[in-house]
Image (cartoon, rainbow, N blue to C red; front, top):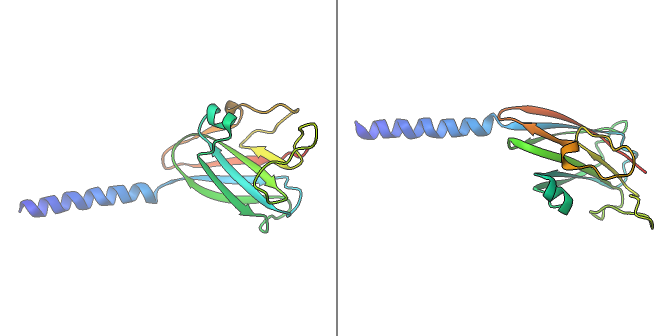
Length: 147
């Protein structure tokens, strides 16, 4: 009888943990104003200001630009709850890094979650960070900027 009770306990425990994976958090990402289909999109998540300044991502992904329609790209990304910042590099030459001109102005497009850069200063993490809760689908909009 005890063995049956223990087995039921473990079954409930396993099913509840499985439910945590099934009802996950999703980022519903809409990237707008992409100027062409050359190269790839480099997506990145940052955990805080220090990691953003050091360009240390906690998650990164490269996406083909073949699915762009009218300058827009859409992707759903399962992610863990917390506070995050999302950025995109339009890596037109596919070298995996931002290209700059001789005075330090970016040659490729870039964008941040729910933040459109005005001027030439680099945003802080707080400018583009967002929170995603457990079992939540969070929609973020990234408007690409080209200088």
